[in-house]
Structures are given as C-alpha cells and as structure tokens.
Image (cartoon, rainbow, N blue to C red; front, side, top):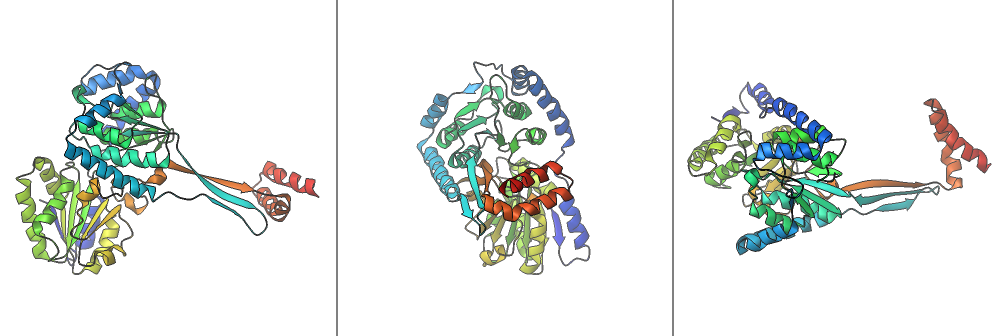
Length: 433
C-alpha cells in the first residue's frame, strides 16, 4: 500500500526524511552492462552496433538497412488518421511557439573606460535525439526534443529509435516528420548512445544527446558525457499533487496520480492535502481506477511501492515539503494555485488549478515535458531552447583601457606565480609607454 504520513505526528520528520531518500531504481547492473556496450561500440564501431542491435532487438541490420529514410516518415504521416495528424500539428505549433519565445538576445556594450564587452548565442552544430521504442513509444517525446533544437537553429538532428523485431511505431515516425528530423536510425539502447557519441561508419557523431530512455540508456549517457553534451540523467517519472477539498472530484485526482504511475513500476505519485477525508476518497478512487487501466498492473506496482498520501495541518505546512521533494511535476489543485506556486522554489514544472492536469502538459501545453527528476529540480531545469545554444563572450581592450586595467592583471598573475600571464600583459603596457 502507499505510504501514509501525517505532518502532525511526532515521528514525521524522520519518516519524511526516510521517504525522501528511498531509492526507486537500481543503477549498478545497468551501469556495468552499459559500460561494456559503450566500450565495444567505441572500439569496434558498426560491427558492435549491429551485433548488439541484432541481439537485443532481434533482427539483422547493416549499413543498407540502419537508416529510416525521410520518405518513410512522410508516408507514416500520410497514413496517420486525420485526428491524430491534427493533434500532432497542434502540439507541435504550441511547443514551437513556447520555445520561440525563449530566444535570448546577444549583448554588446562599451564600459566607461572603453572596454568592449559582449555575449553571443550560437546553435549547436548537431544533436542526437533518443526516442524510446517498443512498449514505451512516445511521439510526444519526438516533438519535445526535436522542436526546440530546430527553433535554436541546430543544423543536423539525428534521431535514434529502437525497433524491436524491426517494427517501427508509425506515430513516432509521423511525429518525426512533423518535427523535421533530418536523419533517423533504427537503433536503440546503450549501443545507440555510444554510436551517437563516438560515431561509426554508419552513424556520424553528434555534439549533444538528448531524450529519455531506460536505465541502460541513462547509464550510457552518463558514461559518454564529456565526449558529448547530454540533457540530463533522467530517473523514474514523478508527480506531486497538492489538493484541498472542493476543488476537484476524487476521481480526477486519482487519474492524475495514476497518469504518472502507469509510466513505470518505479514511478512515484504523491498527494498532499489538509483533509484526511479527501486522502481516503482519493485512495479509494485510485483502487477503483486501477481496475480499468490497460497498464493497471504497472500503475498498481508503482502506487503500492512508491506512492504516498501526506496529511498537513494547513497549506503553509506543505510548502517546505514541496521544496524538499523538488518534484518533476507539481500539480496544484487549489483555490489560490498562483499564490502557492509563488512560494515554491524547487519544481520542474508547475500546473496551476484543477483544470490543468499534468497530462495536458505532456502533450499540448507548450512548455517542455523533459524535466528534472529525483529531486534534481533543486539545481536543474527542464529542457528548453537554451539546451541547444552556446554562449560565447567577447572582449576588446583598446590601448587606453588596457593601461587602466592591465596593471591589476599583472599584479594578480604574479601573485599566482604565472609569469607568462604577467609578461603577456606587461609587454603590451611597456609597448604603449
């Protein structure tokens, strides 16, 4: 059963601390396996990539069959039912508009002594997008990862997607067409991450890898970081719902909790409320809803092993708990959702009011659904336009300005024992005298 906590209990602090630190996944096994796979692909290139793909996805692959051609993506889109095409295009338009609004401006100015300073934004050259396949095929992830890269101006976007038994998810291909994927490969797992990072004869290397995946994909991304950039090491999904009585039926809240629980048996769903009766009603509604879900067994395991119902005396007492949990998704089913949100420091994304379920943000809201998990919202943010841009600073010192600030640079360089640094500046100062 989900854990039941009461903030008024004398043992609450210890129980809550234990709840926060409980592990929901096992990394060591995946880390070891991923390290072996990454090393093999780095050393052997296509040979290892093809061998692992045949082993894990159960179909032969080679240089002539690894690519998913643009015509296949266009054909999948054309064959998609009109209602799904319309939904994909609506989602794409909203995601594109939100990320267009994030575009930063270059900076350029001259300070009061004549030094020219500036900052310039430029897009990455190439990005690899990992898209889950098989039982967890998410067209929405294609849109959320590819569109910001396109908006940023990335010139080459390479998608990799596992195709177990060589079966492609047509809606993933349709989403790739809508998003504007430049090239795509029917590979997945740690071997696909390694191919994107190090390059093979069939898969040219990229500069950054983004996109969700299983524990092996996450482990591989951790290994190749430094050779390439990565977005994040994503853990199991999570939602924290803060609700008060009278704002939404218990059935709504139950569905909100299970919308995360059905992702994975290690996902986590938490409900905080000031009303014990509401917690009871939602718990009962969760049990009833589990009976009708296609992924009910997955959701039940997640809910029973990692779920929590937390009673607080008032909403003010919920604020420090929310900030400590630092949830990936924070859903506020409150009369004054905006007022509560203003006090939240740590959350990946906040959903305001009873009419804004987190699930709408997964698809058509506009903000990105790739968000920090496992309390990493304390120090990181969700995927955005900025993940596909780099900042380059500019500095220009005319002689008069160097005479004013150069001596201090010489002093500091000498204090650090870096003689060439000091000499580099001092020679210019001497040459001006």
